[in-house]
View: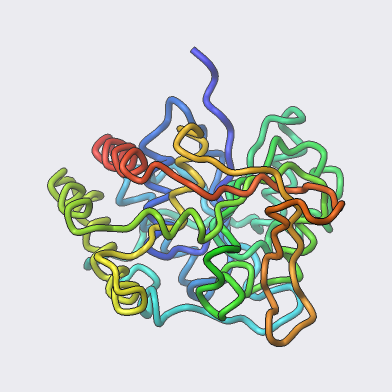
Length: 314
């Protein structure tokens, strides 16, 4: 049997981040989670590091190491999304404060040390929030760029436009300078833009199936999704909202659920109108280097089958 793939999850939980973490923790045969690094994004850092530990405890995995990282973007004031995720970031269920300790080491130092102590090509970064920690790690130790297997990231949008401004997706908008550094670094990147995530909707029947599992983790997740989707139902007029971040982990488990193509992706950092836009050369109309595999389609039913089955294992 192949060895499980070694991953670091960099995250700003968020209900959909929680679903991604649970999907990874429910898949120990395929994924070896080396640690969770947290960043300010959906909510401020003191809540994202708390929320990551809550999700680990809900999943009966208090052994997972959680590290706090950057509390603000590299060059801008922090923008958060309590209007989507609620004041805690995990609004919905009643959750206890975490008992497991936060690691003393800074997330950026953990990422650097982890990548440098593993063999080249062994570690994959799964990024679910703004790319601040990753950009800072690349700056601190440039050698890690060549040692990473790849980055699988939730971020950006092209045909779907943006979700925080008309042009920009939230994760990229919060720290466009960090995203620009990461996209230019030369590491292999797989990108899950809104074009994919808007196709995986938390339809009522899908959430009911998760709730029917009956475990503490599954019921909490269903309650989070019921809270989280109210904003998107209002905004998109759909039954259920997009479930963005678990697409990253699902890709590692079942890449055959996805289709896309290699493109050049540039990040807009200067324009006040389109800052944070991911300019995707989908039709290859420039000769700019193709630096990311951009996903566009997903088997939504297959995705929810996978998520539901793995949540049942927790």
